[in-house]
Image 1 (cartoon, rainbow over the protein chains, first blue to last red):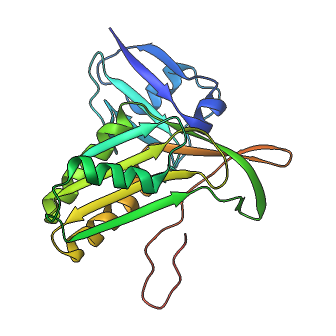
Image 2: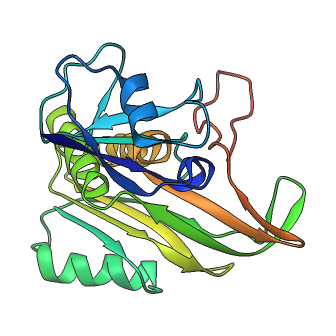
Length: 77
Length: 154
């Protein structure tokens, strides 16, 4: 029973984590996932979040086995 | 439709020509609209010596496929090519190509702009620049759309 948590770019460096499995708990919030992963920094206000590779905003309903990604504003192209 | 993320240097003009010859029927498309993004050697007042582009494998391809499908739903398109570089990049090398084929110019031009603007504001890529004294993450992309009478970012 776990979720896979990924961090990218500057957040990966600031958090000190690339990828980590976090124990799943029913009803867990994104800040709880962030803390559960053991990130070294606070969750920034401008963080972008994707669940199973789809952007998400606001309240979430996570399931066992989900992939949660935290990343900063994107700068491709 | 072809979406590709590539680690190695490419010639954007050759890629468009090869795609056109291999995937397009001659005489079918009256319009081709292209956007090519190239790495600059300056940004934010600093000389940039090189750049590393990181992405989110899996989500990047999924997101680009979704946005191309949205464009195909909004405009009448024959084909779309999106090719984006990742890894270590030198100034003057192409970062991205978006090419759109349609019967008439409005569909190709509008869809090309829609795809590149979404790519720049939503697709999960991140640039880290090598400048004198170290590396820095690019914090955000400028908006490509300008209000009437105002100058857009690049």
